Amino acid sequence: VPVIAQEEGSKDILMMAWMNKDALLATLRLGEAVYWTRSRQKLWHKGEESGHTQKVKEIRLDCDGDTIVLLVEQKDGIACHTGEHSCFFQRWDCAKSAWVDESKGHQ
Image 1 (spheres, one colour):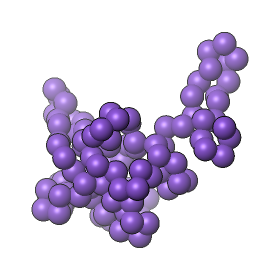
Image 2 (cartoon, helix red, strand yellow):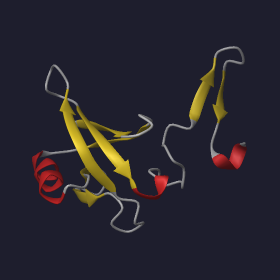
Image 3 (spheres, one colour):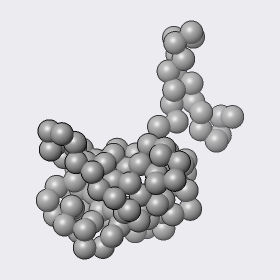
Image 4 (cartoon, one colour):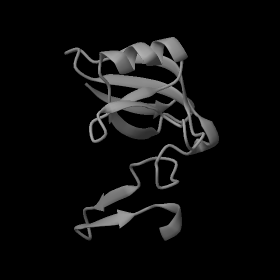
């Protein structure tokens, strides 16, 4: 199922990933986000290599039971593999009809 990681304090949307049953069970057991990586076909403990773990504070399920929101405490404030706080740093500018890169490197 799709999973949205949302930061507990700021309510920022940090990232979107996937979970299967094993990933959800591992998340519940560890108290930290564990996702299913579709490209590598394996469990992925977020931050296991970078140290940017996500401590799970709350889990929500949508009304259809097919999407999860994890309310997380993001270690070091970096969720994206690019080093950004959020993976959602591209914003559509309606006036310019163009994407605007709001990453730290473009400000």
